[in-house]
Image: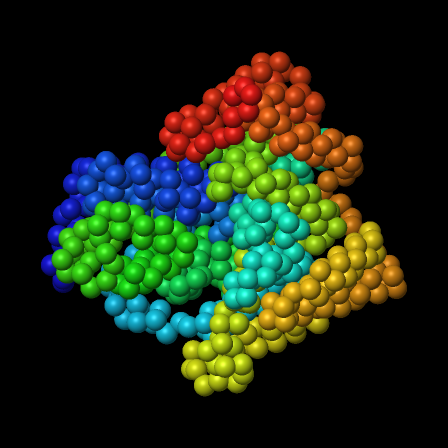
Length: 492
Length: 142
């Protein structure tokens, strides 16, 4: 065994580092749980706090915040159908259904264990196979990123099986809206209506918060019913999953861990892409025998939560080895590293090896902390569900406002969030799924920019894309994915 | 309703397509392709809605009706709240909004109507101002 692993382990077990992990995890869970504050923001907000401590403890804390926040988002997703971070959106579908049936505890338990397994898996991958994985991340050029984003968008097809046309419209509308802003290649202003706030395009977070959280707040009060739990049955809720539950989800958890770790490694794809793709895969494989899929299935729930936490370790692979962040949160992490004088690359593993290995080992402990605190605090969280919806709605609206404001200190963003809230509500009432629109807004810009970059590299023709093996693989995946989804739609 | 929505979408497409005409060839190609795709889809929706009729959504679980006036009022109140944030300051505005909206929505237990907003605003203050140091708009007041 690499002696540096033992050194790292020894370091982490010191009281100050364990304390940093504990504090970081709790803060991360709290930040993640609030709709509007994302994992990226959580890490960013806590970097200044780490100034006052030594680099190792500071990094441990940041890692813990990262893991905690990605998990924390599942709490509000499950209890209120307002995902704390975009990566928890698929969690909210089945998780909230379980809450409505009085099974919030079970949902939280499954979510906690799933996040734990996903995080541990990716931490292991980071520790054991970082160098070869890093090389893999280098093979991703514009054509591959274009195809990956396109693949993510084809998931719109499978997510729309309830009403295909409306799903497509929602997705394509998202892509159209995403073309707003300055064209990065030529400099033209597209569809900005002279609004400064739109020059950078439609900001992702406010539009997401509006579509999902704000509209959900309104839905909570549109009828006279005062509680979230509407379906009462003779079910007994419990926090710890039973052995039969584990048996049911273990293959999903394993698969989702792999998906999440790989997507984390790929620069440009993050928790959102991972959770959607993982959910889609699970749906493909399990919906035949799992009748509950979409209505409260623990398989669906675990697929999403495992994948988004598996992104954490994966995203640190290219970051630590090459200095290329795997996603937005790890980009902020990069900032944290640089501030402490640690430059990513081979030096990080040799000269600063002690700190780096301490960080990697600390991820294991962060996930353990996540498991412990998640289960301990869950009974308190569940009480939220008992609060009258007339009180919850205004509180969610306030959190949505703060969340949209916090990113750019902009009231314009809050106003955008409000508009998307109206759009989201109208869509919900008319059976237009909002997930495709979210995918369109997030992935649309990537599809366009990477496609155009690829065309520049290929000097105008798209055919060289078939000569790249990785691209070829993606193209096959996309065609296959379309084929399967269309076949399923036509069957109905 | 589907028909109205598809017509609105078509109007949106026409508007956006018109706006894209003045862009350079490099930057307008991709948007125009997607706008055309959206128009096609909207026409399909319009066709389906016109000829197949619309499915009535059965509410098996909830037999309650949606109270549109409540929804509408909450949107208006929220809009006013957002508009006033920069004028009278975030914390004061939030406090008033919470008290007002909770009461409007029907909560009559005065202890809740006054103390929940107070507690929540205080909690927001601790977390955002003191802990995370995220600035919030300060208007004339606070």
